[in-house]
Length: 460
Image (cartoon, rainbow, N blue to C red; front, side, top):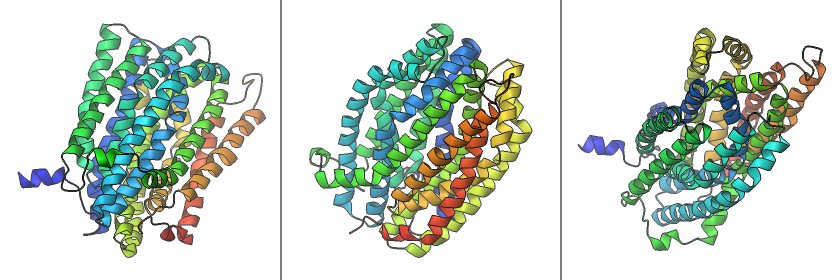
């Protein structure tokens, strides 16, 4: 029984073999990230099979806008994770408690802002992006439901980040698995049984993530041995709010930059028509799974680095970084090979249209090798963020997404215009993405080796 309870307790990552601690922490996160991706994938499969390819395109066109308006939560989550891991590693109970309390209050304020702004800007943004008339109503309904129920999604992601900062990646996983099963069940009920269409998919996800958020709150209320959570700690503390925003803002801006680039590229994608839009949705769903190990190891490196920087064990950070990259690259290489061999079968899960499957697989072959580059990028940016340097990853993201990806995408599209492809070849979208991934790995390696991240710890 004691061993079982240990699984759901906060964990100290400052002792033991680095590779072992990283794997122990990353595996539950990987399973959880796969489950998180399953939310979106289940939506796509059910929409594609029960409603049609146009509905699939509607969900895809809505995604960049949804991601853009979630940047507030990305910022709070990253800032909280860094502060929690460093204060936990340094054994600073009061600072840890105030950080968690401030995080909860900031999330409530941010959720209220999104609930008001989101529904107002949705339709104008979709129109501005030249979303086809055949799908704009569905895209609007999908986004409005998400924004009205944003608090559940926000609190799950942020509180799960707090749990991971404490070294507990198991609890977040269990809560997410429960929520995922509920999400799939509600998807089928609302879409297949009640014929609610695309809005039913959004409603199912909102309900499921709200339940996972409630479970996170209950778990944190029962972790009294690690920190104190009461009304005093929930007061909006100016000092801790500033630290959260200072650490989280660059990551939030990074996500905003990425989302804006996605929106600009989505406008190009929309110009290629419904078939390419639907293919892009399918590729991004498969891409979501392929990228999960990279995101998992990147997040694991952030917590691992944060705790060890808090404990002032920089030698363990260096050793853990080498171990983490080796493991992440090995896993990513395996996944790339599997995608190239079995990719068509994966594409066929989303649609029965052979032309769409073939088009999706053609584009995925362009991207495949980029996942190995992203393994390096995610690990190194995770180390820098965990140490408190969130500015450098932000600038690298700015360069790779805005300076490299967008011009490359539009440049190739312009140069490949023809009678058959009046707006250019659709491959331009994916060649530009591959280019940005490879350049990101190179630039992150250079800045990691420079070592400025070692001077960014928040611990006094």
